[in-house]
Image 1 (cartoon, rainbow, N blue to C red):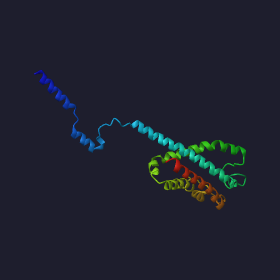
Image 2 (tube, rainbow, N blue to C red):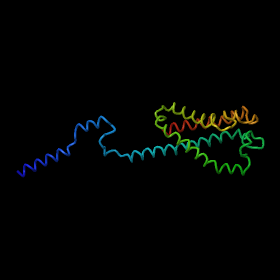
Image 3 (cartoon, one colour):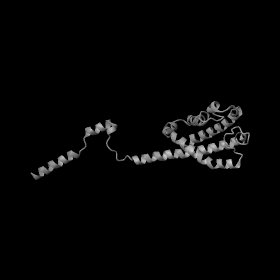
Image 4 (cartoon, one colour):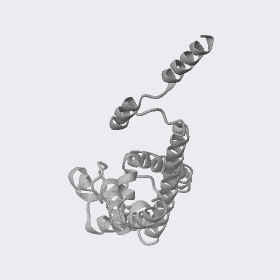
Length: 202
């Protein structure tokens, strides 16, 4: 009699812990109620995403700063009349021929470009997957166009090489040579940035 009661209890305990196949099949059909997967490691996944985003932001910022510096140095070789001297075309900016002004620009140039790079990179984070799915040629074209149009031609800053400049600047600041010269820098920068970032960041 005692053995019979023990066997009954054992069967009851086994039945109570045996998984319900119908419930499992219901969970399998409904992804919102899937059984817990103890092999899933959300912290590791989150860490990978953070590392990927950080790599993109740092790489973007470095490429932007280098491309912007190279383009600016190239332009200044034949366009110093725009930014330097008493008769410079854009006399509303600091005169780069004055040592004090040039030193001040040198001090704040790098921090400013790093800040610009980080801000521009963060804005693109939600689009990383979509940009990465593009072919290299289309990706480069997108990045070149993005920087040339948004950061230069169609930016909201009135300058001799922007659409806003044509609207708000006085006539003395608007000329074909100034427009084309500054756009040359913008084109060089956009090409350097697009070719490099399209290859290295995706």
